[in-house]
Amino acid sequence: MPQPADLLLTHARVLTQNPDQPRAEAVAVRGNRIVFVGGAADAEAWRGPGTRVIDGQGATLIPGLIDSHFHLMHGALGLDTAQLWPATTPDQAAAILRDYLAGNRTRPWVQGWGLRYAVFPDDPPVRRQLDAIAADRPMLLTAYDGHTAWANTRALELAGLLTGYPEVAQAEWIVRDAAGAPTGELREGAMALVRRHIPEPDAARRRELVQAALKRLAQAGLTSVHNMDGNLEQLALYAAMEDVGELTLRVYVPYSVTPETTVEQLAEAVEMARLQGDPASGGGPGLARGGAVKFFMDGVLESYTALMLAPYADRPESGGEGLYSLEHFARMATECDRRGLQIFVHCCGDGAVRRTLDGYAAVQRANGRRDSRHRVEHIEVIHPDDLPRFRQLGVLGSVQPLHAPADVNDGDVWPSRAGRERWPLSFAWRTLREAGVHLAFGSDWPVVTYDPLLGLQAALTRRPWQPGDPEQRQTLDEALAGYTRDAAYAEFQEHEKGQLKPGRLADLVLLSGDLEQTPPEAVTDLKPVLTVMDGRIVHEG
Image (cartoon, rainbow, N blue to C red; front, side, top):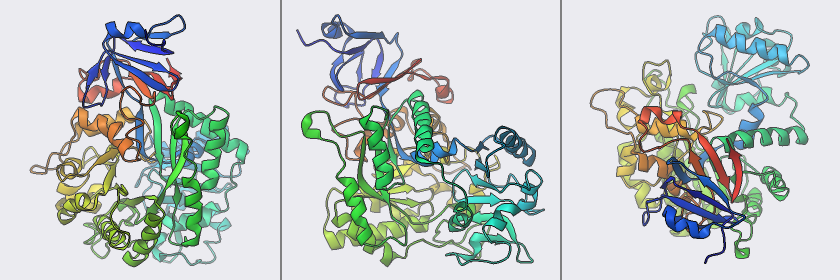
C-alpha cells in the first residue's frame, strides 16, 4: 500500500500535457509533489484517513497555468489607479476618472492605467481635455501597453515641460503642436520626466498591492509567471514573501538591462541567479528565483516606436528606431550569455526581431553554442527571411494572443500602422510554429488582462484579417501547451512543472466544466474552481 496522499482529485477529465500519458481520471498529491496520475479506481489506493478528496465531477483538470510574459509589480501597483480599460470614448474615460477623483480626494496625483489609443482626439490638445476633468491636480494616464502616457497641464508644469524642453533620447517622444507647445502626449522615455514627480508607494503599500494581485491571479488559475522586469530589490521582496508563506505564485525575475547599463552592473543579475532555492533538498526550486535578463530592442507600433524594416504604412517618413545598435546589443548580450544568463528581448517590429536575431548570432560566434534558450518576446510582425533563423539559432518565441486585434475594424490602430502588406506575417503564431519555433504564451499584464482563459480563447479563435492571409489560430493542445508544458521549457523548468506526472511539482487547476467539449468562443464561460500551487490550495470556490 502506498503512503496516503494529502490531496486526491478524482473523477476528472485530466489533460496531463504528458505525451506518454495524455489523459487520466485522477491525480494524487503528497507534500508539494504529484505521486500518482491514472484511473479513478487505482487512485483509491492513495486515499487515507487524512486525505482531502475532491470529486472532479467530469470537469477538466490541467497543469497549473504559466504566463510567460508578465509584469507583476507594475500590474500590482496599477491596481491603485483608475482602470481605464472599458473606455472607448472621451466621455467614458472622463466618467471613470471622475469616479476615481471622488473616491481618492486626498491623493496628490490622479493616475490612470489602460487607456486605449485615440480615445481622446488630437484637437483640442489632450492636456486641455484632461484639464477639463481635473485642472488643480496633476494627472498622468498611461496607455494599455505602457509605452505612451497623457498628462494634463499641471503635470507638465511640475515636470518643467511648459517652460523648457529637457533633452530626451528622441525629440519626438514629447509630442508638440504646430506652435511647439506640448500636447500632453508623452512617449517612451519622456514619460519618466513626469513620473519622477509622482510619490512612490512605501514598502508596506507595495506589499499590500502585490498580495491583492496574488489573490486575483490564483483565482485565474495562474501558478507561475515569467516576469519581464526586475532587479535584486524586487526579487528580494518576493523571496521575503515566500519565507513567510505569503507568495502563492512562482515568479521568475530577470534583471532589467537598459541602454545605460554597464557590464559591471550585470553583477546584480548574477547575484539574482544565485537565488534558485535548494533542489537538492527535494523541495524543488524556490518560488522566487532569478537567472535571466530583459532587454527592450524597440517600442510598439501604436506609438511609432517599434523598429521596422520598412516605413510605417500610415507614416511613410518613419520606420522607428531601435533602442540598441546591433553592436551595442551584441556586446551586452554576449556578456550576459557568458555569465550563463537567459536573455529575453522585447521585439514588436520586424526590424527589432532581425536585429535581435543578428545579435544572438554574434553571441554564438563569440561564446559558442549552448542550450541557452534565449528568447524573442512579442514578435508582432516578422519578415519571412527571419523565420528559419529561430530554429537555426535555438531561439524561442514568446507571444501574447490577446495582443492581436480580433478585427481590423474594431478601432485598434495596430493594423493601419503595419499596413496590409505586413498582415500575413502579423501575430503569425502558426507560421512561426511551422517554422520550428518553440512558442510560449502569456499576457503582458497589465497591458492586457491576466486571465489565461481569455488568452486561450484568443489563440483558439484567431481569424485572418483579409482573404488569402494564412490561418494563425492554434489547436487546443497547442494553446494549452503554450501555457503549460512549453512555457515550463521556456524557463528551463520542464523537468519540474508544466505536466501532470508523478514526480512533478503539484501545480494544477480544476476548471468548472469540460474544456474539450466547450466551443472555442465559449472558453471563458469556464472558471477555475480550484488552484493548487506547490501542493497548497491557493484558490477554491
